[in-house]
Amino acid sequence: MKRKAAALAPKRRESELTAWLASDDAAFTEKARRLASAKGRAARDRLLRDGLAGEFAARLLSQAHGDSQRQIESWRLVGQLWAQEPTQELWRAHFRAASVESAPPSPKSFVNVPLAPIVEALLGLYGRDALAWCIYAYLIRSGPAALAISEAIVSYAFAVDAIVEAIEAALTELEAEPDNHPGGIPGKVASLLVRRIAAAPRPDNSAVAKISSLTFSREQTAILMQALLAAQLSIGAAPSDNLDHALAETAWIEADDALARALQQTPALREAIREPTELSPLLRSQIGAIVQAIRTSAAKRELEIEGSPGSEATFDPVKHANDDPRVRSIGRVRLVTPTVFQGRGANRRVLRAADVEPA
Image 1 (spheres, rainbow, N blue to C red):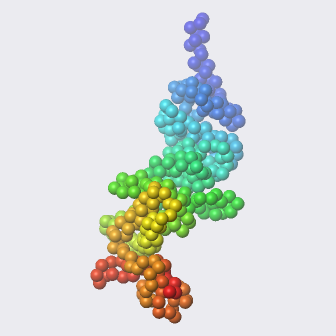
Image 2: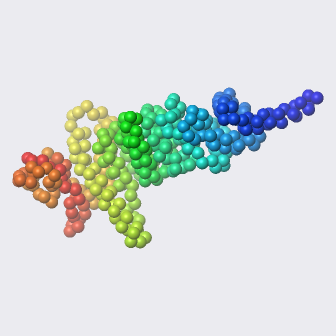
Image 3: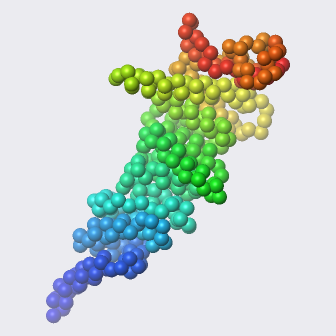
């Protein structure tokens, strides 16, 4: 009799699990919450062992969309199981096999919910299609939470242009919500791009990685982003046809202009780290690394500067910008930023005119 009862126990447990998987959303979510908890390991292992984990994963994903609290809870559980050791690979395989097209509500809806595991799950399930959501989540979080999200994004090694496209989408969504505009976005954007570029197998990783600890103003962030993106463009690719060649030429024109603007700032940065200020030795070293990275990339594109900020010169409409109407009628000007030239010998030309003011 005891042996018969023991034999029936597994069938009874399987029947209970099957009934639970078919229960209404509220009952299912409550059971799923207990299953994903620290005390639910035995139940999780039983689902895996009895071949019901796939059905559970599909059910959890199928209700993990929209804006309701239950759907937020479902995505929290998806992220929790996605990262659950030591069976995470088994759970990930079941979630992927479910092939359920699902999306979480806005990251703003996840109050007091860790977003990094959800970001991991989304990128693992939907790849680039989930990148804008994940970057939006990164931009509205701060401190260790934001760092964990950025690490998850960088670990998937998306192309830099994919990350830039997703950043644009996230910023567009944020701009549409003026009442929910978190601070520090320029620094976060710069940090994410630098972390992604530093993660690539490049010989100057150590120098580039130092940049990620700096906090930049909005203008500095734009300059740095453009310079780093310019340095990432391939210089050895041969055009396959006229259209490709035209697109490549356009990309290089934009990249060279961005790099030239960054190069114009390097004398001021050099002067800042030479003067006796309150800058720490570490910060001086990091700024020096930025300057060196920009100058190295500029040299590859045959860019060089002429003139020192603060020096005076005779106004030259070719070398000097004439945006300031006062400089057109005077002979002497003071340089604010230097002139940037590109090319060698007869091909040398002014790429960016120097910013000047009346002397």
